[in-house]
Image (tube, rainbow, N blue to C red; front, top):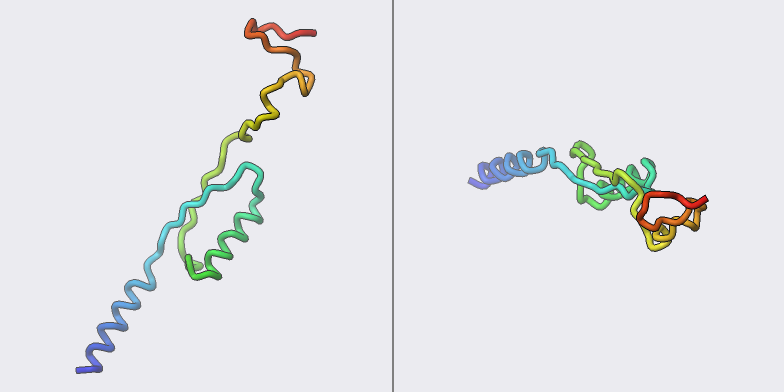
Amino acid sequence: MIASQERRLSRLERSLGDKRRTHYLWREWDETSELVSTRIRDMIARGDAKPFDRFIIFHWSDQPKGEGDQNPTAEGAGSDDGSGAAAC
């Protein structure tokens, strides 16, 4: 009877352990591919993921605007008074 329970437990562990999971990660706008690969390797090393899991990586389409981006004249773009005309 113990041998049959061990076989059942072994089958259950195999079926649960071999399932491929999908992990979703956000890639920051300034993050390189190497840093993303390092994050994935760290997840595998911690046991949060397995090497055969699927990793889907989302990335920002544009650099986020910070507080410094509010002043277009800082980069010589001219003033923006809403009229659509740039100052020379």
